[in-house]
Image (cartoon, rainbow, N blue to C red):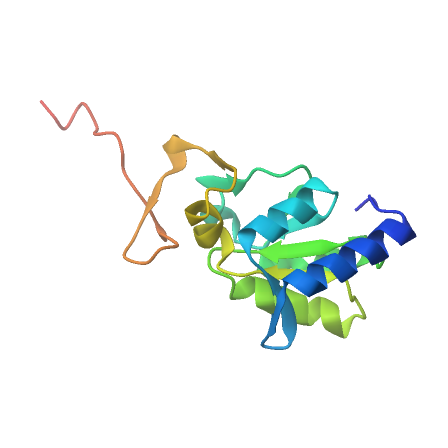
Amino acid sequence: MVGYFNNSNTIMLINLVKEKSFYSRGMYNLIPSDALMLCNLGAILIDVREDYLNTHKRFDVPFCFQIPISDINNYLNDFNHTDVYIFADSVGLRSAEAIKILDKEGFNNVFNLAGGIVEWEKSCMPVITNPDEMLSGSCACQLKYRNLTKNKDNDK
């Protein structure tokens, strides 16, 4: 992944975000508004949801990449130690796993999006929605595909 910050901007942004973030479970966590601010300044958002979970709603930020948590180890060489990364998922749990993996590899500029896309959307942050891929389920992350159209042959 290409670097979007120069070193002095990176240091300034990291200090700003660390002041605004909260430290929990061994990592820095960002609320959606602070994550959006950082994304608009060039931070890279990594959505670690599996492919079947990210087709209905996606983060609408300038630099967003989909790397499922199951594939994260295959992409470690693509991460740049000087870039700022925000990891996100449905509710903030799998993204925390990704941060732990990158932390072991020596990455310091990694942040977790607290609450994932569920909290992101509740906070009225920008999302791209594909109604044809709507999911349903009993939890907020909505795990099952919803059948929106009836088979016309069965309606006869």
